[in-house]
Length: 76
Image (cartoon, rainbow, N blue to C red):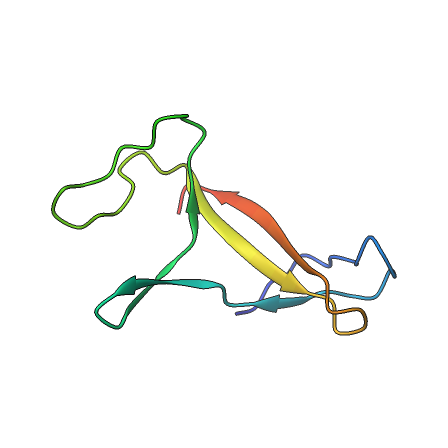
């Protein structure tokens, strides 16, 4: 996972490294973490995925203090 935005750790100011964060959906399938602003997430009866997702969560790791941060990316 690559990212052109330079992000720094709020704890130690070291540059963050983009990481892949996945959710195991069952049956060996993996999927990106998604988010919704709606309090009642609507899931598909067929796939189990959230139908009204606003986007995905991108993960970043600080290689110095091991802090993990998530940033929302709308529209994915």
